[in-house]
Image 1 (tube, helix red, strand yellow):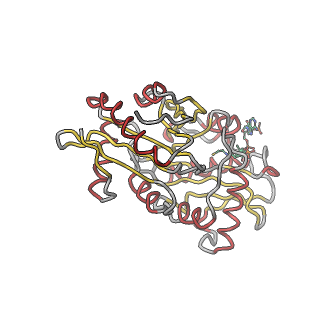
Image 2 (tube, helix red, strand yellow):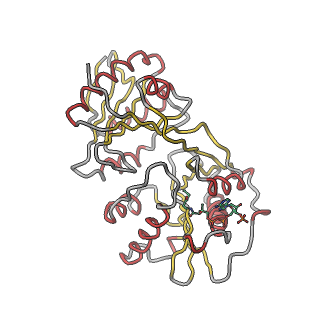
Image 3 (tube, rainbow, N blue to C red):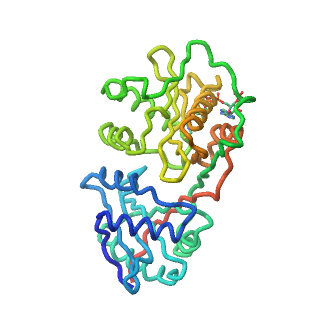
Length: 314
Ligand SMILES: CC(C)(COP(=O)(O)OP(=O)(O)OC[C@H]1O[C@@H](n2cnc3c(N)ncnc32)[C@H](O)[C@@H]1OP(=O)(O)O)[C@@H](O)C(=O)NCCC(=O)NCCS
């Protein structure tokens, strides 16, 4: 076995995509998004990725990095994949990882894996414990009938796509950023979300190569933004990916989230997509209720794992 640093070259991104496809065909990598994310890392963030080779063939990958969504001092997010016939290498990869992260003195290792992947059992065996679950769920638009769910919007509210709004102007972007911050505070995660600073948010969200300004909807009351939902392009065929959905506290339980999701579904259909994917935390009953009513079907859960304290290398 050879573990070599990832070169961040087009060839290595392709090799990474191939190995992921072979290991987890149900969850292919979004390479455009991964590249964009890698490029928006700041110099003080950790990002170490390796390819695992056997007889000249890439059979796996390993990574440790500052957590992308919730950068927390002392925490590193780790991940690995190995070909089914190379699973026996997991123990050696783990030893390599512990040696590499030791100088960084992490207080906690984090991982996110699907409950039906071999990584889940392996990481549990290394002492990781489960923190929370998220469900990816999928709506098949060919089986979707919005008819029964449609209701008139509350008076004074209109829904508009980003494309019809001055989203390239900084004042507008700052208002959108503040709405997202307010909504993120209410997403029921086990650990509070540390929001990205404005400039990083702008780069990661509004310059995301998968951004679809026509599929990103805002609920407006006059000039005020009171809710949103957003669909992004996906690397999966015939699919659009949901980002954040949320409605300001003052405007909840008036049917706005449902109306936004219905508008997004109508857009997706007109756009020629067949599937909409979304991810929800297990504790988010309101959002799960809306998605269940729309007909989203859950996939196996993605489990957030933690290991603290981090064992020393042998
Ligand atoms: C989840 C959220 C978007 C719902 O917005 P909303 O505009 O209040 O939702 P709607 O009024 O469209 O609700 C539609 C239906 O969903 C269900 N629902 C909504 N909120 C609910 C709640 N708090 N508890 C139980 N069911 C709820 C109800 O069946 C509701 O219909 P009803 O009001 O006729 O009973 C909102 O609570 C929110 O912004 N939460 C914080 C952000 C978040 O967690 N977003 C999801 C993560 S991506």
